[in-house]
Length: 165
Image (cartoon, rainbow, N blue to C red):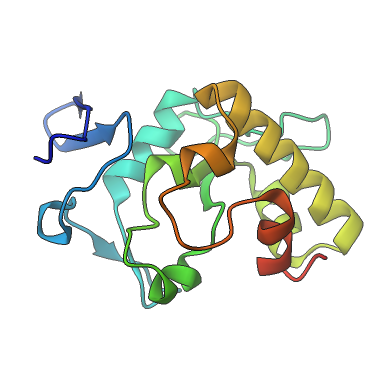
């Protein structure tokens, strides 16, 4: 592992093993976690990282508003989806893996759908809540935590990626 990476290995029972990078990481692509393809995108995503994000936030939506839709999943936990703040569709424009904890947030289905399909005002509010949650959760703004990316990581740049500005 590269010297610049401070990582912690986390286990979720006998199946999941996640390596969480706590700092800037220059791990070569060959050392990234194994990925499973999603049916809705040509880009591969780590199911283990997504599960880590759900568990780390106690299966709660990052927006946490009364408008959040909540129901129990089959495992008995609140159902939340893991959203990539910088869309995985942008992966082609980055040599750095976008499927990482510092680019993920847990969202209820309503907030996730609003972000991708909602009107500019509602989707912009959800994104603002997500970025505020990120800073509270990680102790630094999203742009600072992802400064190694060559893609825009400011709130305005992210809103532009979603066609909201």
